[in-house]
Amino acid sequence: MVKATSKADLYRKLPAVDDLVHSPRLASLVLDDGLPAATDAARAALSRLRTEISEGRLDSAGVDLALSGIVDAVERHARQMLSHSLRSVINATGVILHTNLGRAPLGASAVEHMGEVSTTFSNLEFDIASGERGKRDEHVDRLFRKLLNESLSPDENRSGKISTIVVNNNAAAVLLVLNTLAEGGEVLVSRGELVEIGGSFRIPDVMLKSQAVLREVGTTKRTRLSDYESALNEKTRLLLRVHRSNFQITGFTERPRVEDLAELARQRNIPLFEDLGSGVLVDLQSFGVSGEPSVLDSLRAGVDLVSYSGDKLLGGPQAGILSGRSDLIARMRTNSLFRALRVDKLTYAGLEATLLAYVKRNYAAVPVLRMMSLSKAEIAARAQAVAQTVQSSQLSLQMQDGESLIGGGAAPSATLPTRLLAISHRNLSANELAARLRGSDPPIVARVEESRVLIDLRTVGPEQDESVAHALQLLGGGRLEE
Ligand SMILES: *Cc1c(COP(=O)(O)O)cnc(C)c1O
Image 1 (cartoon, protein in one colour):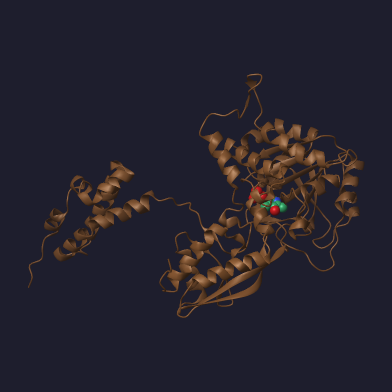
Image 2 (image 1 turned 180 degrees about the vertical axis):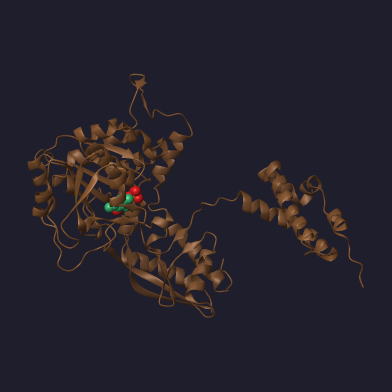
């Protein structure tokens, strides 16, 4: 019988933390990440060994084996502890606005401007000319005025000047409007527009929090102007219209034209507010997308106030934007909720640079617009090039027609024709293959459909094509052609 080594003997085999961290093979870790972090990692690796000894899972030979790999273990701990949790992924789903994948990627000029004004002090709330206090919203309001006011004819711009303010997200914008204009009163909304976005934004819940009372009119399929008319009473403060951004009601449906609702609102002297969801500032028709109302369409139709997200079709940072009648916007500004929902200089900087691209009509500088504008032929050529790089007997790569989605609470039916790479693996199911792709560095997120993995390069940056080809090559077990 082999004499069992006592646990005390086993513990004695372990090096001291200080000795371990100063071992020559950890010198580069100490140099890169600093002594405190390297010490933490060494302590974690040793503590793991101590636990295994105390639980009786290691004998003398086991401890020796573990110690031979202790340096690697320390490095592993350091990597786990010090790497970012939030990381870049390749979106190969073809869904342009994917809420789980961070919605709109920012353009280079937005990121550059954010870096520039956030690493130094800035004139966020400072008027450089007068040396006095300024307003943070001035930085983007001037651009919204240019993009919105100047496009409206004096006749369309009935309400006078259009002003814009920015809050944290569109949900916050809706809350601010309902609370400012309808606290203690009633808001009329069609039963066909009681939307829920991503499970956490539900019109009835936001209404409750705003202290306004929701008054549903019409039915889910049909709501007529007369339904609003008969529900109007002395407690009505606001007419609300919500863009059905993530669902469609098909069949015989009916709802009043925005113009008619606006006319009714004007007659009764009650503001009409539209929650647009996605903030479209260009004519999407030219991108092959129809039926998605733009901010200008709504203002032209006589809507008093519209709200929309900064990070949907507008293609900027997360924000909730409120554009509309200056007198109503002025009331939002004085609500203490506005202060609670305000955004940081980073958001203003990202938004300002994104809006400047619109002012210059440089739509290619806005990534979501650039992705929308790609033709099927351009995508097919890139997919072909990726397929040709991959040499593997394990993988089968085929090209097939398909559709990209706008997504993200914008135009639920809006799709764009695309060319997909359909991939299957000899020994892996489609779900397993998709999981391996997510395990790539950077992770690649693709669609799975009918036992194949589908890759849509519309949402992949052209500079990322190589990473996709590389990951596929590795998965296919083949060698890489340099
Ligand atoms: C997306 C969306 C919202 C929520 O916007 P966030 O910016 O995510 O807060 C609200 N209403 C509609 C109609 C939407 O499409």
